[in-house]
Image (cartoon, rainbow, N blue to C red; front, side, top):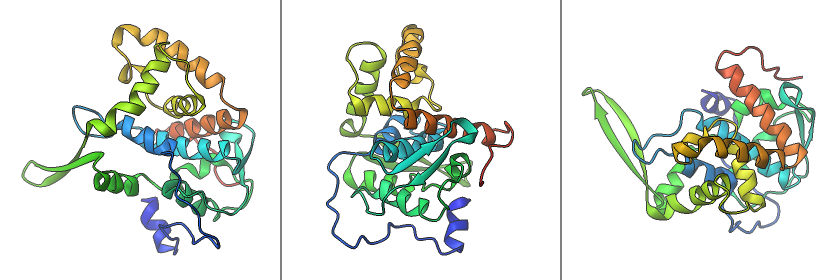
Amino acid sequence: MWEWLLKAFGVADEPLISPTPVPARMTPSLAHEALLICVHPVTGTLWDHTRHIWSAALLIELAHEGRLQVTGSGKATRHTLVGSSLLGDPELDMTLTRLELYRPGWKTVGQVDFLPGPEHLVERLVAEGLVVEEERVTGGLFKRRRLHLTAAGRDEPAARVRAALLGEAVPDERTALLVAALNVAMPTRLLVPKDRVKEADRRMREIVAGVGEAERALISAVRAARARSEGGGDGGGGD
């Protein structure tokens, strides 16, 4: 809904043109990796709360890059955009462009649902051969999309997260941030064998506790936005 509403107000889907050339980033964004993990390997559907995991990944990466100044926590979290240059990643740059529309210091919880969605990335992943898209007609009327990950798309991000949650590897900085984004809405039972869920839960909490203060504040804001979307009350948008 938010996408067409923003279009009606003339908000561009694509990032603004930088006054100087911006080299393409070679490292996939956290949102890119999170989306691959959110595709169910059997049903080909996205996890119910992919939108909030996606938003958390975008915001915490921008904070980690020094592009967001963050204060408060939970519903009271506020952020201010720092700098105007693009980063060379389509999803991050669209997010920067979108955040430019807001007055500095607005509450984060009120902006989560207005961030760009993952649709552009899905199209690009299909083009790159990391995802195969299939449409099925159900009931003779309704089209349902299925996303099937190729081996190249599936293995690496999920394997890193699983190894971190099972204590098989010490997570590097980016893996820790990815785990933190997933912690917004993805149960560990979707990531590890069911007989190891308790230890994975413990390690996930430990990993999240070790990321930066700004990143933790943004995670708490996205959780508040998720609670509001599920009927948990006012998330406290705007001022």
